[in-house]
Image 1 (cartoon, one colour):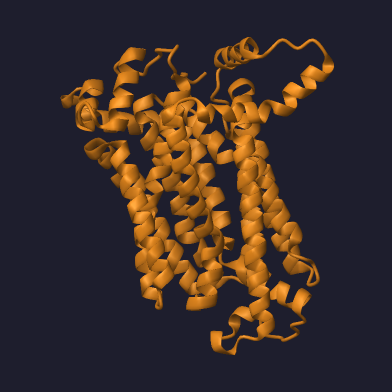
Image 2 (tube, rainbow, N blue to C red; image 1 turned 135 degrees about the vertical axis):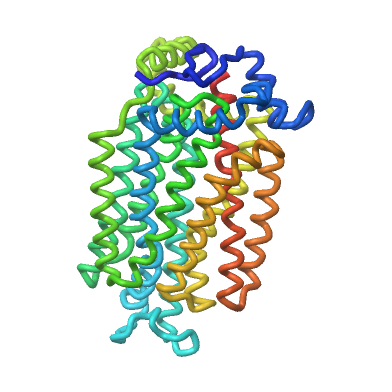
Length: 439
């Protein structure tokens, strides 16, 4: 059973110096606020100045040898390959389908193959329908994730991580399946694709995977661990859109569905359960001790119906949680809009084709991998988590402004290079929340 790192468990590897719960709390708050010393001083307190280099190699060894992290990063790479390969296919297929089904377009040429000045009006209307559907599906998906993430996290704290992750990954198979079906059957509506994408927000398998990492990684190594996982995602996104240049849209969609199914099977067979029985039982007893007395069956039903809202109250736990939640909300709004609508905008306004999409995501993926695997850990050590979040927000504002004023493709590519720096904030939220929830 992998070690569980939390406030009640001082199990350590040979490379980790044990520290008390009070010291960890004080070091964490200092690291976040940067009021009482630099992050370099904190690192020295935790590991000693002479052991910083040794700590980096120890982190890599611990990450590779621990049962769980290698499987998670492999799974992220596979899923990123699948999702990234179809990211340029979906706007092209859906715009053309809406133009034909809703607006009477009957031409032999797909809508996106027209130059902007020659594009039929029916195709423009189809593009609007596609953007509206994508925005609505994304809104529903993110709303469901917001409402259920705390509950799913609480359930996984008791029942284990693997089952919840498998449910989430299984639900993510539905949208690629309907994308294939939509291209096989010419009169099929895009609604099942967007509906399945929206419903997949019920279970965020990525969030649970980061909780799984927290089970087996010590607190000071969680942020770089999250960074490695996101680097795996970036690596998959970097090269998968190239497939659309060499394969047909249907071929790419079948490839994406096939490797997603393979990834799901791999997860079923090789993904370990990182939550120990003792930690699960402790979480269950804690929940039962906090549960109000229920005298009737209606009290039980009412408690279960209100449990998701009750779990969300953790966001109001203290000022730090409220601040982190607000930051995550605003950054999530912008990043979701970028991921959902950017390609529609680029293909419609800047006339991006499959090759341009592949170039764009290669830049985003490679730079994201460099940022997560190379830059993040030194930046955390030099300037601290708070300033990393500030830099990520400033860069995010800059690159979205560049998207808005871009008239040439080169401007988009420069903005995409900067966009990779905004991803640094994500694991800072995750590490901060994980650290506070363990207290």
